[in-house]
Image (cartoon, rainbow, N blue to C red; front, side, top):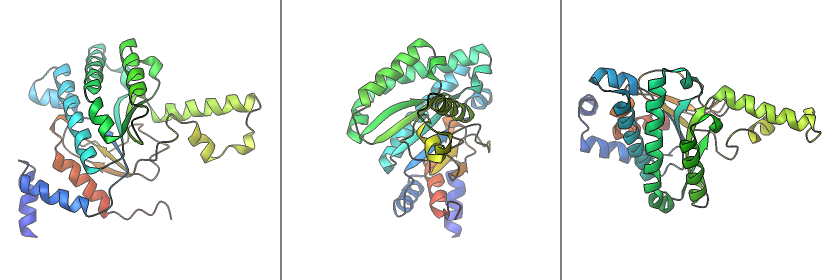
Length: 263
């Protein structure tokens, strides 16, 4: 036990391959989450810590997301939802919003380069949120990525962009209200399933595990309806610093919990 405590502390400083292999073996020996949500946080604090510009920091975070997707794919996780830009983020200073959108635009281009891997893994891409609020270039690339991957398989990478959990519920209620108004639905028929059927991605299973980078411990309006029984894990590392062992620790922590789902 003392040896593993020492290795655990050392791994906070340097990612020891032996320790990583140990964690992977433990993770594969138990049930893996089917759907992992990730709140991508800490880019700005990372920039201040290292004296970087916003765009450089966001670009490092985007490259880290590519690694995270590869790690989760190698583990066999079927669904990943990335919280990249919230509806509230539009209120940030213009230079920050512009930098974020420029990096997201670049990253969507890089996703086209990953289409072969998506196809081999059976992964389709989808975006969730009020996409009409996004710049045209980003909307167009999202549409083309969704179209290109729609028949790849039953696994998914979901990008929550211009997204808010409350906004999603409001949009669902509006759709339901329209159906009631038009006589297509009775108010007596409204239940959890009806609401679920009108969310942005009704076929997407609820996240088993939600990870947030940067040390903040809140959901920040992410998947509010869907996360009712999700397990939450908060990691101290800023997004650009996030390592494979941080991911493995999060999953190992999830596996040790007893999920009663309210029962």
